[in-house]
Image (tube, rainbow, N blue to C red):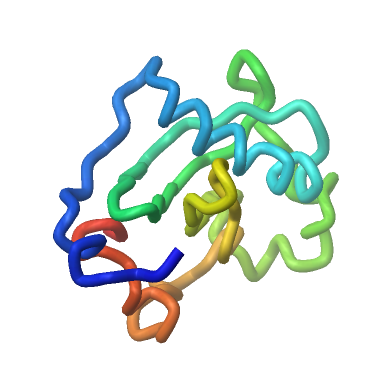
Length: 128
C-alpha cells in the first residue's frame, strides 16, 4: 500500500469498545505482549487511535481479571529498574488484510516516537 496525501486526510478516531476494528488491533498486539510478558495477557487501553491504514495503541498489559504482571518474571527482568513499568506503545499498519505491528516500545521513559522518521508517515493525531 502506498501512502498518499488522501490517506493522511482520512480522519483519525478511537475505535469504540466492542467494535471489530478495536478487537482486531488489540488482537494483533496480543502475541507480541504474550511473547514478552507470558500468556495470558489482557490490556487496559490508555490510548488507541486509527486512521489512514495506521493505528497507535498505548496499553497496560495485565493478567485476565486485573492481576498485575511482575516485570521481574518477564524477559525484562534485568531491565526493570530502568523502565517506566509495563506501559506498551505499539504502531500498527493495516496491510495484507490484517493489522501488523510495525514498531513498539515497552516501558519507555520518553516520547520515543517524537521526531522519529517512521512516525512522520502517520496521520496527524494518531499519536498522543
